[in-house]
Length: 298
Ligand code: CP
Ligand code: NVA
Image (cartoon, rainbow, N blue to C red; front, side):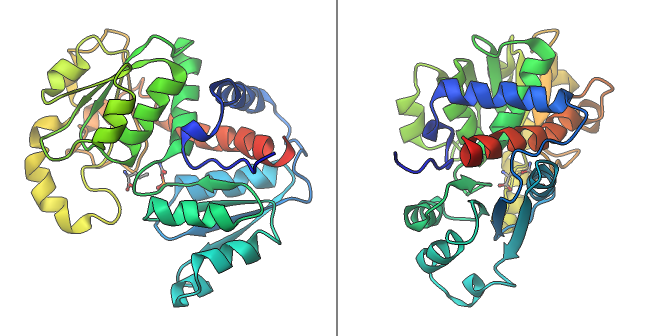
């Protein structure tokens, strides 16, 4: 059987993704740590900053009885030019699974091609599939099934937006995306999943009747130089009380975090008493446990 990687949501059958999310919900309810991954090691290679993803992976491995090894470009030979393929060949002879946070999605695919063990995308410039496991878990906990729900994405057509497009097809929800012109997600994804996804320029149109409204920073990691130009171009795309008024009355707001209050989201929305963003962040860990069990233990 071919090695099972998790570089995008499309790498796993939809039924398995649902099983992973249900297992995450079960694991969250268990008071005692499990021991399903005793003796197993997760390699983490992070070329970009992280709080949630790193902590979630390390604590997940620890609570399941395993261990993790954390590398960055600065403290590994990757930063001194050792080829990705060589790093993959070496690391995958020592650990049972590897999670990578990097820039180029192609270099992640190259790593996976040379790895003997499953490789997880811990965020690339193009996709952030692990975040979607947590987001769908959070929606299911709060509202039940996400199938048939109406989801609005407001802001940059970035890695998170593109993983929402993938998720719309896998989990069967409809996704309305509002981005300023020039910041759309890849046309190829919009075409492939046209049955589930539509693109508009007016955020009010995207949010109208939505069960879930999602946004993310206007300048992702690696795009810091564009921050001020983007702040101007995205000014009309802030998720605030006025915009949320167009959504369904029970609509949830989600954000993968870190958030910039006063830019892509107003403080009153992010810090609302019923905000689920903190539950969403916590679910990163529970869903990672379920994903690690699935990839390592089967
Ligand atoms: N949402 C998310 O991936 O957060 P970190 O960048 O802190 O890992
Ligand atoms: N789109 C953001 C997500 C951070 C978790 C970024 O890539 O920086």
